[in-house]
Image (cartoon, rainbow, N blue to C red; front, side, top):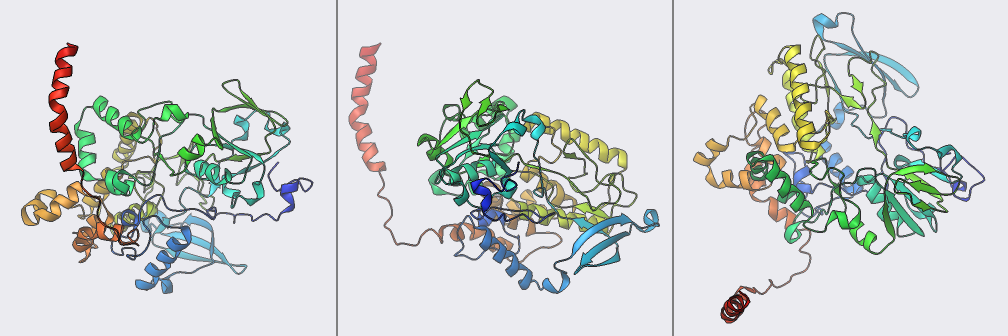
Length: 504
């Protein structure tokens, strides 16, 4: 039963805040996992005083500010439900679509030359109850993470969270402040890293660079995998905390969480293996251990892809929760390429700049300025990328991709990819920042269609905007320890040599 279905249970007495059908839903404490400099619209940086990682309410305000700045609100019809998208009878000649909408109880249809589907992939919850034997006998309550909003309803409860993803870790950490005990079950483990990386820098400004991408592709696969595992284990050894992925070299998207380590070491969150069976009041795990008196189960088991508004389901084919799209955007077998799926891609980078580049590429396709190859070549490209994803990410998920490689692939097709050789000859300072520095969204507005005159300056000042919101107190610089270390080294070097000789 759902957490809210049984009126005789104490927790169900509180009114349910039901997520709206067909829309994404988040819990109140959601913060971004990408820092502001890496997730902004490429021609609209966040305000200087915004924190590096942003609460969902401030992100919403930023999007409103963006829409007002570019005078977009007059082009948007709010509170309008799309109920049907279908090809016009003459689609093979015109490529036009008929879109049926409902607003204030009234239905109407309109014809569009092109359609962008921007529903993302966090709308339709995946609740695979068939994979959890005995769930029908469980006397406690269960819910999908999409229904979770705040921890107060779980005070004093024993809670099992199923799923070691971003949502699962966030919810487990938050519940650990009120629940009597939280168990976090994982089938295959995952890499877990902090938003704050070396020297307190945002992780993505340190790791998402052209240099690291080049090095990753240049080195032999075995060496690259070794470096990847070493960097992921730098803060703590995943195997010691029960987090280590089954496939240690997997490059699948890591979990970003600053608090899960302390929660585990304090014992308020316990990592458990996959659930083997649910019983009336207990849970049997695959390692044979049994946890008694479990009150609530939160299934953080992800989402499914669905496009219920498409009259012809074959237009956007989804099999085994995988969607086959050319460049992760266009259905390859359309007679006319006038439909684009935006934001249905998973990478190491942020969603906003990725969607921005996808839209720019799609517009050029709609206009006929970016010509697509024959269907056979598009299908082969999809299959080739699928094979590469198995090699790098250990998954055939057609939506998984490398951020910089993908962004460069799209922008090169529309003439917006930074030309490193040209930059090195004409603007070497900028070239060094583009190659060795963060691959921030401004890079993709330096040239080509949509070029922004402020892109160069934004790149040179991105670290200033990163430091400003944290330097809220004047503090003296740290005293350098280098001279002290040199003196100590000179004093102890003879002793070290003597001990070495005596040892041998």
